[in-house]
Length: 277
Image (cartoon, rainbow, N blue to C red; front, top):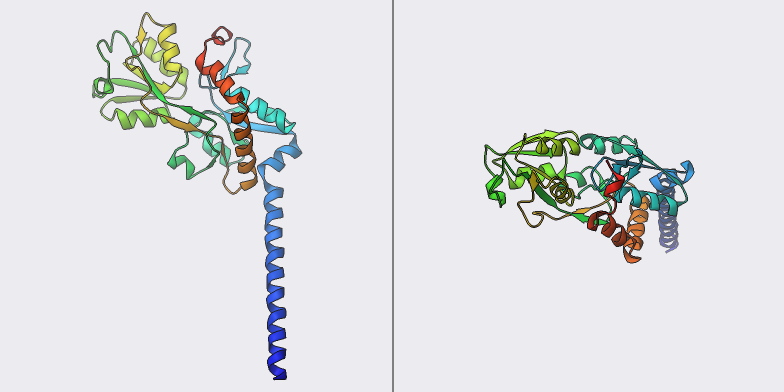
């Protein structure tokens, strides 16, 4: 009987020690995660480093060479509320995710559509904006075209920016068309205005703005966007604290109406057009 009691006490003590060790290990892991989080790094550095690329009106340069646009407003307010400065790091879209993963910047705030393939590489926040693909065409080359089917032919050339969801949408919805890839968005529209391609597939509302600005040579063959995609911040995996913080900020910015107000300005008006070249 005595040996049985001794065994029970020994077993109970061992179980308690194992539980305490588990709690200690969990606390240690949690502390390591907190210390290594992107948010903590930003706070210590005093600078939020943002990866982005030029997409009108998401991010673009004004006549003085300064960055303006929807994403610029978003990242600037985010940094202000973190009480840090913001540094924008323009990066070619085709290499923007690798640049994030190697630590060139803290987060991508650049109109990045949330897709399954991208989510295998990065963590996305909740959507803070929605976009869709539109199509603007050359009046001479695409005369009479009024549907996606009209453009889905082997002899039709479509310009898109490399590595974007516009390129993915063009491949999916216009599989027979000949796609011409360009490193920058302005190149695609310049090629269209020069009459070298039939159309450009791009994120709304840029195609509509192009059709209005160059109404003598361009037109919108489709009345609405032909896709809808959620837009999120992208950050490195394994950082739950930063993901939670960014999601909380997005929720607050949605609820107080600020994101909608900025959306209305950049996507629903043309008040900013005279600021850019």
